[in-house]
Amino acid sequence: MEISYHGHSVVKIQTNGHTILIDPFINGNGQTDLTVAEEAPDIIILTHGHNDHVGDTVELAKKKDALVIAPNELANWLSWQGVKAHPMHIGGAREFDFGKVKFTQAFHGSSYVTDNNEIIYMGMPAGVLIFVEGLTIYHAGDTALFSDMKLIAERHPIDVAFLPIGDNFTMGPEDAAYAVSLLKPKFVIPIHYNTFPPIEQDPQVFAELVQNADVQILKAGEKVNCF
Image (cartoon, rainbow, N blue to C red; front, side, top):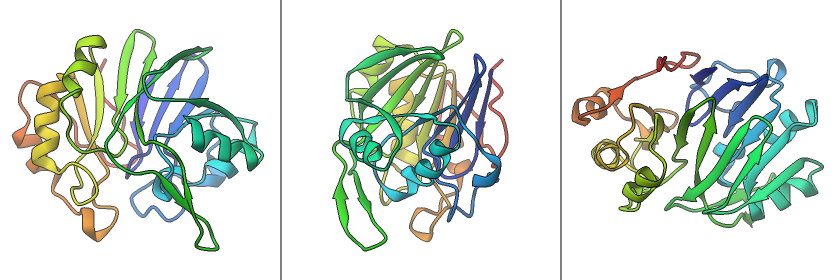
């Protein structure tokens, strides 16, 4: 299995013969190394409906009829765009042929802005737990700090966590570091920073605040070293 980071909140997991993309914001993402032309995922997992997370989902999914797993309202909307989408919701889990997916709560918003500047409500935002090849991977999506992160970790001990540190719209470095103390992951990767001016951060500040976890500050395209 390979787990890699690709700027903003984009994560790729290659496992059991499948390529999974989480929140594939590629076009317009100055931090990514990916191109839509070169990517053809089998699975896409979305945490919420904001444009910088839905990204290029529709075009990518239609390449090889990829399955998109997303919160209910967002999945329904994607199905209206001709995408094969599986709706889930917070607290729900499901086994797929590549592994198991479970959505968690996140404290944020979720809406999509169309080309006509129409704002479409996309239901609740979420984080996501992915259970593959004996590992538990947690992508927090966009979220504030919340105390039930401790409960998530008690129920599902986390190996690899992707946590936003950009502040302004999500946790900043200090709150994200405290989240690590609740989640107790073995490895943590900061995400959702430096893409736009309001979320510019020095990830080294986050790393210096974290205790009892291996912080890996990755450039776009770099792999998580957890093996």
